[in-house]
Length: 140
Image (cartoon, rainbow, N blue to C red; front, side, top):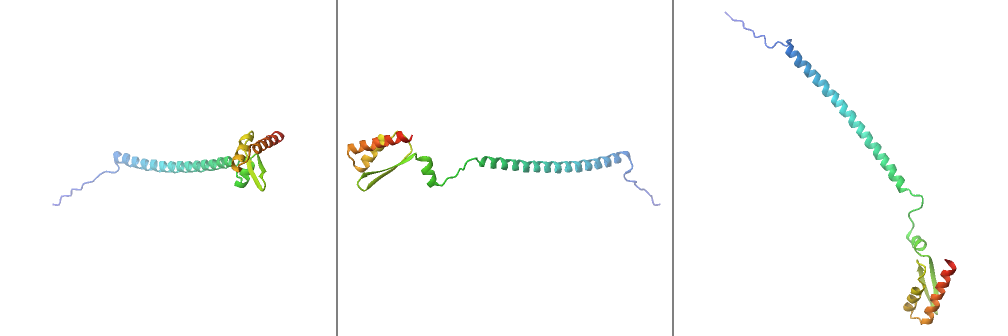
């Protein structure tokens, strides 16, 4: 007597298992959709970053390109932009006094500086001061 007891196992055609299977398929589809959406979103963000960088580059270039020439060599810079005029006088026989002037109205201090530097008499200091004042009045 062999008893035949067969356990039918789980009936996969039952409504509960069909619902579980349907949920798994729906979940897989949802995850696929989310992955596609995230990839699209990452591409959009990447393209926006590239566009922003390009805009920033053009803005920087626009800021860096002024209408006038910015760079001037040091030799040109010191002569043109800082000094208004240059004095060259023979204060003693064979001795030239050269001075670049960057401010007007300093005739007295310039004459005093030249007199001190070259040990000049007071009357020479006065002559230098008057000469500078006359030149400034004529030119400026």
